[in-house]
Length: 400
Image (cartoon, rainbow, N blue to C red; front, side, top):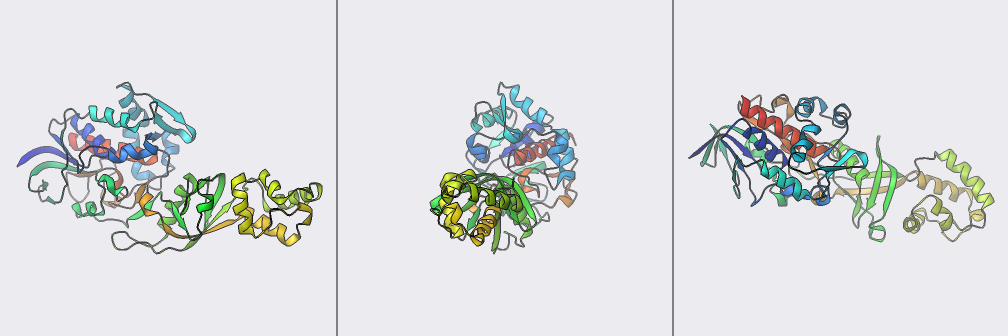
């Protein structure tokens, strides 16, 4: 049986970073990867461009997470500056885009993976190795024994990368409910005719939750950054656990198409415009407010004739127009599970030391990344979790 000081299970962003950090102080580290190569999920992030982190100041960054108190130590231990320096020391620089998103200047996630792999020269990497059991004394598959073990197996999204709901059973640690996160929504209504259209800077609401962002229509439903980020709150509010059952959902999403105007302001403007631009057809007038290729769909949903002149629109139709512009609704029937980006839930943080990532139940057992009950919005926040918790876990395991 082969023996190592530290075994890292999972060759995704968190596992790779854990192995890098561990190898700085230990010469006996093995990284176990189920696939034939490392970082498959990393290669897919940011549309293949790899939005590696979000460059907000740490205090503001932490406020973007519901688990900010747990994440604080790892974020200050391995900062964005530390992360970017790791790549810049190898000649890879970065560009900053809107919302503080950071990408490699080459815009290739493969370049991120190449640099990370370069840092693993002192780590034994075993590919095509699926961990099926971890027995007492950290005996893995009856083949490998380690003094310490770091679990970085990810969540249950992107199953083609090796993530599997079965991975949660590798330890006996208590789990929170496992749910879909950052997931598109499937609508009852067929949206094929407007697939590909984007609504910019609208306000999307679900019950009392609201978020400003872009909405992209797909053939089967709603996606885009605004919807994706709101989906976390939606998923958390619904009672289900993917370890036991699929979600049974039916709810309504409302979109304020003109958040810059109140209903009263819109009514005043319509009163004036309908009088002074009375000969203008409604479909042409709406170009002042809506993207052209969305107008026909919008009018059909309002049951209004686009050919009608403004001066001929009665009060009832005007009120219906205002209502639809301020509250355009969609009935949601499911999550688009195949496109979920993160997992909500995982290893219960109550049993993990945030200053070391070590289990408080099992000494020398550590966790990192998405396997933990940690998640954030889209825009580099979740890779930040992976890299910082991975680094802290690896460093802690090698120093103890």
